[in-house]
Length: 305
Image 1 (cartoon, rainbow, N blue to C red):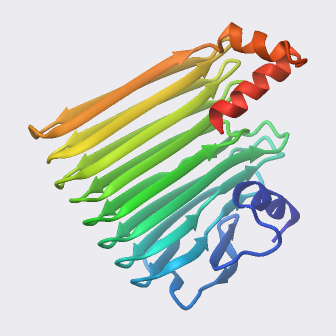
Image 2: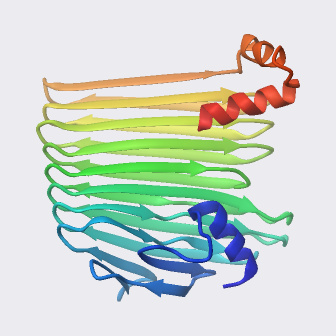
């Protein structure tokens, strides 16, 4: 690994020189470190660039980390990663991405992840994205997530874009079976001329299936964000989509949550709110000795926390 990769790993996956559990570290399209465990096997895909990660049934309390880093301009990294999660497992998956660019050429990572959750399994999936470097080349991260949840399984997604990414298209498609649940917590920050497009499509196909999607974002300067969510209730189910955004300066936020109830017992709700930071919030913090800039930073950190 080069030194830039090491620094990115510290930001996106809490790397401190080593990982606990199974892992694969991807640098500029190549694996630069890998380790499987007794219960989690990582192998190269045979038909495309990327990995097959197989988690044995009943695996609990273990983790797998698959961070990906692009550390120079002129690189367009594409990877396909498939996760096969055995029945009654309970695991943590960490899949952060960092793009560093000091050149005038674009740098991009496109990770296409598919999750197949067995009956009664539970996965917490943590994904952090960051862009660094002073080059004028565009830094792009375009994740695609597809998930198939069998009966009684749970997928908890914790996704954040913590700064520096010029362009991102984030697409998530999930099919949820009876008694299974999808929980999403997304946080996005855009500044300057950055663009972020987020898209969710969730099918609730079984009795007592459920989805709870919460997206919080901050758009500053002249950045633009687009949020689209579609929840389709095909059975007795519960679905909730919430988009809250803080907008400032000349930024643009477009939010379009949609619901499709295709069963009489599909209970679906959506919420969307976009606005500036309340003046009384800033005033209250300024009475505690903070400057206006410090007060805004505190409010944004708490909102995205």
